[in-house]
Length: 330
Image (cartoon, rainbow, N blue to C red; front, side, top):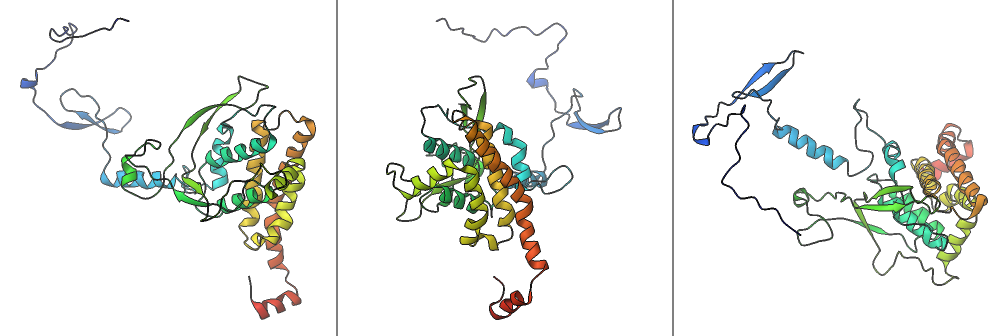
């Protein structure tokens, strides 16, 4: 294989209509400000009258760093009107581009499919700083994707860590940043050309509590995780309704008003993710209808569950007021 070599001098001659000023004769002239035809003031090089590149001021650099940090957690960005964009609207903007990092072939066990899909769902988005991730972990524990509640740590980039790209900004602050990793994926074997781009955006690393493991035990068919996951896969819509009703009450999640909106909204995103990626494409119309029904239940709960708290505050009875007098509000 031949390789081209260029050696200078001799240097190529410039075009006939171009004049190059020798460096020894160059005299810097600074810049001037001119008004354009539309009335805008621009800065140009005083010699060549070429527009110059704008250099950010210290205030602008600080503002951009602050905005960059905000983007590491969903729900902290502003739109063009200065309105704070809530996390669910932020997720919705890029939801169609989020996919699976694996091919759910027919021979793949449904437990493994759902476990990997849940991981892709978690890694493929930035999460709000508070309130949403604990509900997600509770849901995974409920359906058997976790054996215990996880803990999270910040992903810190270092020069000596080859698995995480080093960023100079990482050395200046302790706030985690996402390190995009692009993976070509195929959403379904039914359409080999239907490929998407999966990007790791979660800025926190999942770990386990001391002496515990978050990994479910699928090797033992009698394990609690297997029983829970098999029950959910067999009746996804029923499992969704139970989680959004009795499970929230049994785990006391129902007494935090924000959970009444976060839980159904989170499940709606996850169930739509399962439908859009065709995770159970080979299991027939019944499975597709189960997922569709579960989405409907979650969408309805987004509206109705928060109303239960408002209703309870609006019409407390004498008995309830007596309880508050004895034990206070929870």
